[in-house]
Length: 414
Ligand code: NIG
Ligand code: FE
Image 1: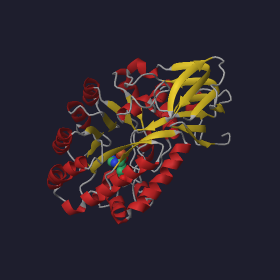
Image 2: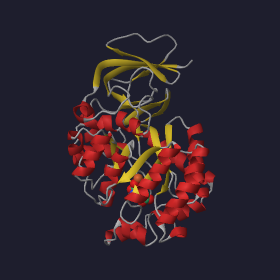
Image 3: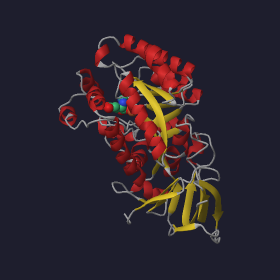
Image 4: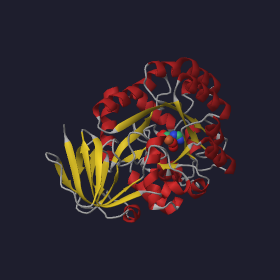
C-alpha cells in the first residue's frame, strides 16, 4: 500500500458530489482552511480541517499554506494529430475564415493528410509529450477525440494511440470517436455517402473493438448539417455510445437544439448559440463545454456563459487543443479567459474545469472533486486563493501535481 499525506494546506477549494453543478450551485464550493488530505493507493481517503498528525508510514507533502484544488479536467481535446498548421496564420490575417480554409482543402483536411502519413508510434510519442506538458499544468484527466483520419484505418490508428496512452499514463483518459469531423477528399461533394459509410461500416467496428466511449459530430455550415448529424448520433446511440456535439461554433444551425433532443452529455463550443439553443440545453440537462481559447485564437466572440449559468445549464470549460483553432493545451489560460471574457467567478470556473468537466467525460464519480473515494488527483498551487489563480496569466502556477496519488512534478515558484 502506498499512502500520501498532504499537510499544511492553507485553503482547500473543491466542488462536491458526482453530478454536474448548474446555476447558483456552479459557484458553490467547499472551502476548508488549514486542511490535510490523506490518500491511499491512488484514492482520497480522508480530509481533515485543522491540525492533525500524519498517519504512520505515509509519505508527507507540505503544501506550505498554499491553495489546493482537485486536478484539472480537460473535457475537449484533439491531441492525437500529425503536423502543425502555422502556414494558416498569414492566411487568417489576410482575412480567410476558418471555413474558407477548410473548403479549399486546408484546415482539418491538412491535418488529416499529416495524420494519415504518420506512424502509430510517432503519433503516440507526440501525444505523450503533450500529455506531459498538460500534467505539469495540473491537468489530470483528458478527453481525446479522433477525427484526423476520416477513414477506418486512420481513425482506428488514432483510437489505438489513445488506447495505448490509457494503458501507460497515470492521467485518466477518455476516448471519443469523431469520424464526422469533416468530409474526407474521397467523398468530396457526397457528405451523405460519407455519413452512410460512417453509420454502416465504421461506427459498428469502433464499438465492437471498444475503441471509444463517446461519438461526436462537427455540426456546422458546410460540414455536417442537422439531419446528417442526427443520423450519425442516432446510430451511435443505438450502438451504445455516449453523445457529444461540436455545436454552433461558427453558425447557429441547430446543433445545440439537436444536443438537447438527443440527450447528449455535452454540447461543445456554443459561441453562436441563440436563446432557443440554450433553452434546449437547459431542458435536456446537457453540459455546455465552452472553449474560450478557441474564441481567442479564431478572433471570435465568446460564448454567453453568464446567460447559460442563469438558465441553469452546467458549464464546463476546456482547451479544445488542436493544430488549427487552438494550438494550446493550457487549461490555466482558459481559466483566465473565462474570468475576463465569460465573466464567470473564480468559484464557477473551478467547478467548470473540475467536476463539470469530469461529468462531461462520464467521470463524475471518479474525479473532479477532493472527496473520499475519488482519485487522488490534486494540485498544490503557487498562490493562496482562487482569485489570484484566475488573475495571473502566462506562467504555470501549478507547484506540485498529484495524479492518482503519484507526485508527478514539482515546479519552482512561479
Ligand atoms: O473544435 N471545429 C472542429 N474541430 C476543432 C478544430 C479542428 C481543426 O481545426 O483541426 C475545433 O475547433
Ligand atoms: Fe474541438
